[in-house]
Length: 101
Image (cartoon, rainbow, N blue to C red):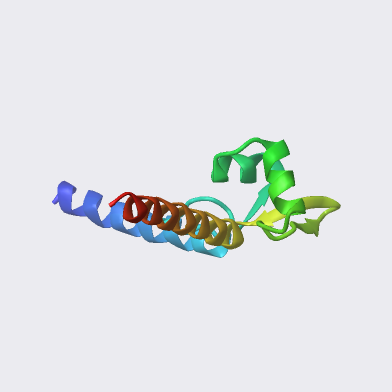
């Protein structure tokens, strides 16, 4: 009986937590908020803040939006950049291998 009550309580708490996370724009799949400060965006992409600013200035990463007077990078746009970069580098490796054979 006590185990069943504990299970129901945990299930309920999990639902409450999921609801709170969803309301704040955080998913269980990607627990980061949808907008990231420059420092956090750089860490997320795996570069330093200076490199992030260079990539932004070059147009490779969309410019951050301003929120509360501070730049915030849109996580989905950073995800798109990372996917493009992975694809670009893999295609480059594939073409190098093809040229060798």
